[in-house]
Image (cartoon, rainbow, N blue to C red; front, side):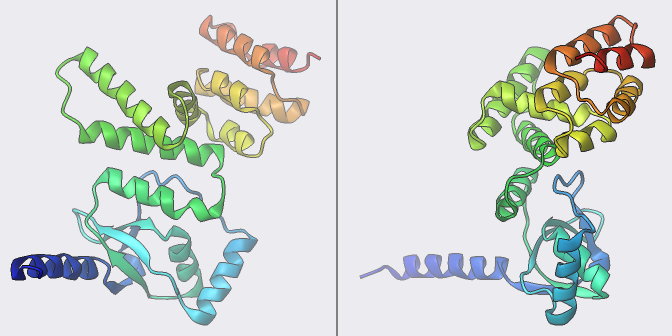
Amino acid sequence: MEEPKSKAKRGAKTAAAAQEDKITLLPLSELHDFPNHPFKVRDDEAMQETTESIRQYGVLVPAIVRPREDGGYEIIAGHRRHHGGTRAGLEEMPCIVREMTDLEAVREMRNSNKQRGDPLPSELAKLLDLEVEAIKHQGARPGNSQEEQALGKRSVEIVGADHDMNYKKVMRYIRLNSLVPELLDMTDAKKLGFMPAVELSYIRPENQRLIAVSIEGEQSSPSVNQAKRLRELDKEGKLNGDVIDGILSEE
């Protein structure tokens, strides 16, 4: 027969779980985007359908949010529903409020967006960076630069294991965050290959913008070797618009 204390303890846990998942109606004005949220919210045809559905039926699936230190709540899962609700003219939407660490929040974002299919390169780049930083901040504070480097590498390895990637691939994706928006959009649209994009991410922003203009003008995307040449010339201070056009116009 089960001990009364065990029953009480189990009941307390169940009650706590039920309390944690309690659905609350919150004003949309109190819901804020998670800083550097990786997944894009677009005003496209799918968003129009979402808005019409919300206008007719309301928000059926609660968002997951966490309290902010300076008031209101951060949206962890439900950015598209929040945007659709705003467009539909709603004043409030159902939410589940949870206390979450940064790492828990980022992992919840990742899991809740799996149903959308494979993320865009720019989305995965931001997500991986958020996960790495959350793990680094969760660990012990490094005492010197060597400890900091070791902690950073370990964080990348942990994130890589979660995403079935090796260390180098995670780092390459994170490099995409150093691209100017024009080149990042081209990478998402598959106008620019992944590995050339990684090489171009090391180039100074002003020259990246010139490259983006040249790609549009030449209607030609650089190969990996061309991107490496552009990177090297930028490093030597020899990159300009004419040089970029010359390299991208090559066969």
